[in-house]
Length: 320
Image 1: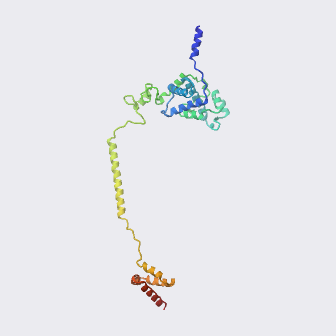
Image 2: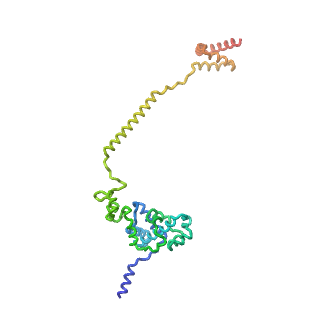
């Protein structure tokens, strides 16, 4: 009786097996990517974040997944990216985006562990999502685990949490969406060395000063004096420019009016007299001389009959 009761209790404590479809896995990775965009540098996903992702998956697909199942799925792709990043970090290896395959030599592939060899022997699913989510964090190629001993690492969540605590002090405290804001409350888990360097960023009340919005302070006398000098300098420059402009306008040379020929009407009247071109040139050359200036003035004011009589008389005398 006791054995049967024990079997029932063990069976009831087991989680229901969930088969993940590709669209569900992609939705999970996209959810983590979108959530990570709004976080600070060095942010790490914890259990409460996996809980939020599980709620989103259950609302979207009605999967009924638990926090541990989402956590295991996240760690699965996290470890997959370790193998991919380690392979791409070596010279000679590259990624074929057309076939989604890591190009790696057979000799190098033979030295990998079974899991890495199976992963790199076929197209990499969700390569772009894993690259965007895990690149730049502690899972890139520079900090990847040894591929020959990777199968010795346990999938237990406690061991993974203990590994993450080793480098906790190198990052700023993450935000806790379920409770107090751990990015603004002075953390009590900082060690003595990290606490000494971080206390300067906190106020006496324990509230961390925001980097984006520094504490506003009143302008000092030095800043006020500098602004006043800047304003005075600008005023002097404007006054100097205005004075130069007025000086240039005052000293500008006067505009030369177009010279008009006072004897223009005389030349026009000569064109109406029936003469040959040579005769008209002879008359014009004679009247254009400086000695005949008085004669030009007289002919300008003379009548047409008088002008005609003088022209024919001049030509007759010229020809004779």
